[in-house]
Length: 313
Image 1 (spheres, rainbow, N blue to C red):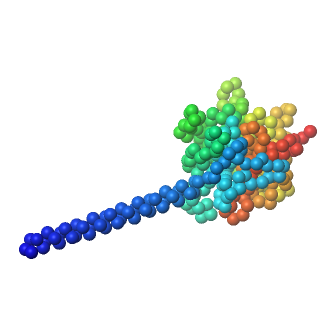
Image 2: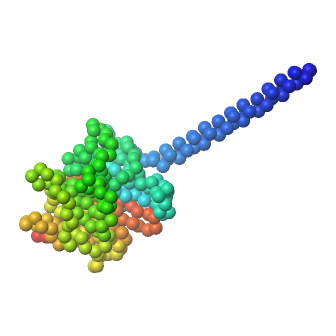
């Protein structure tokens, strides 16, 4: 073998080693990618759910976990809400690590389900930018200072409610809308205030701070106004409560004022943090959140007839 032949053989051997290494690296990347996709799929994999209410047996007059082991699991699940028509359900789950309180590890994500042919299927997932509520006609998804409009079977991009609400000095977490277009919303940047904005002569009115019936105690937040404006539910920590934040309700009076704040009682509230109440669009159930220990927060529900037992006669 000549010196030239030896040199060519040496070059080919080195090329072969490089190609082999490249193929091995590519295989490792593919395997890693496959495992990552598998893990992502398992994180968002839900069992078969059929029938009304995400396939769940309706609750009684004492609050209980909603979809235990499916929606309410170990971890951080918040803001369960059905869209008008009861064919879509949305909730928020932290896909990061809530207990670290590190913005880089906190990833609150809205997960949406839709009922098709009696079966509930996940159909959307997006980053939460404000708590989800719906206009009573189901055409608008409110998200704090923003909203999305219904576009066919999908939703538009998030839009701003404009300078009246999209203010740097206001910390809106939840905005709830009535059928008349009244907005009620919280503000954690203003000592936990709740404000209201009505429509008069077709024009949106400047928001005003609600009175002491609502704005008393600590951690006052997350209002829900009934579509017909007959009552308002919110959470607050007050003297005489059951522990941490409790759910309170106020009924609209004949003179249009708001009646006294009524603690919703031990069938709803607990010694833990109870908050984020919403009534399903069919008026049958009250959903809310309860902190059940450590970093575990679950969605609870109860028969909405509990509201009628509290309504003054």
